[in-house]
Image 1 (cartoon, rainbow, N blue to C red):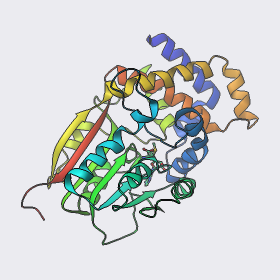
Image 2 (cartoon, rainbow, N blue to C red):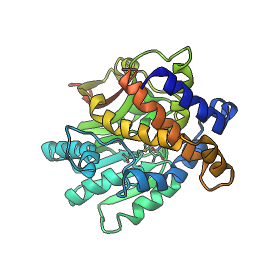
Image 3 (cartoon, helix red, strand yellow):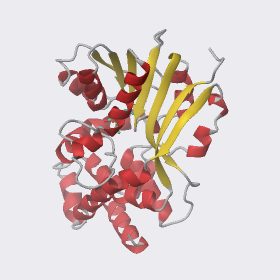
Image 4 (cartoon, rainbow, N blue to C red):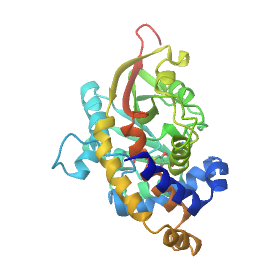
Length: 310
Ligand SMILES: C[S@@+](CC[C@H](N)C(=O)[O-])C[C@H]1O[C@@H](n2cnc3c(N)ncnc32)[C@H](O)[C@@H]1O
């Protein structure tokens, strides 16, 4: 997309939501909860009726959307099978899509999930009544309820990007792994410094606001973090080009929604649409741009304990 088109559409969102709201809202747990509570309807309607809240990973044309959405869970499933894991924790499970998929496939494995958003916990529980091995709780990975519990596998799909301290979360949960345990993360990271000038700065602020993020974490800073010295990054794979096609579809939807910005603004003012809908439009407009320009990357990280460290 050319920069003028992006800048013009960004301006439309600033006019609809107001620069004060976009730049001054601040991202607290309350904002994140409200974002997911009010967006879950749109996720189910426009992205995944099965309740996935993450990017589908695509390896070519003609593959069903649901299969692409199961990519992350299929990878986790392969580790469970390979290492005969029996106790698994999902951080930020959303509507429970990944854990439900895994719990169905592995009836003898115990699955626990935590998520910040109460409405997500309710939905995940409701949708997994037939799965006695799946347990969902409301909790925060930034400030979790203390526990002595250990897990063979802990995974997080597009959730610890919301953390106040991503390296701290990885350190905390690495310490909760059993000896041969693994931590798996699928998430978006920043590959370049934050933009300092417009139009990218304006678009970047919309991107953060649109995804209810305080920041995008620098990929290098996380992988080189001294706090993770006791862990190996056993696998690092970039999937940016595999998630880009979906982001481009998301962007087309944003263009459509912004064709008549005054209608969108009126719909929000009259409470026909929640303000979070405009956030979704902002995220849709900008995420493909930052992926295409190599500014952001989508990665899988697999961490395991270094030998000799208990
Ligand atoms: C993009 S959704 C991903 C959901 C799920 N992992 C999936 O793949 O469908 C991010 C989820 O992270 C949760 N979340 C955000 N901050 C959190 C925190 N501090 N602790 C636990 N969950 C959190 C949100 O409530 C939301 O359900």
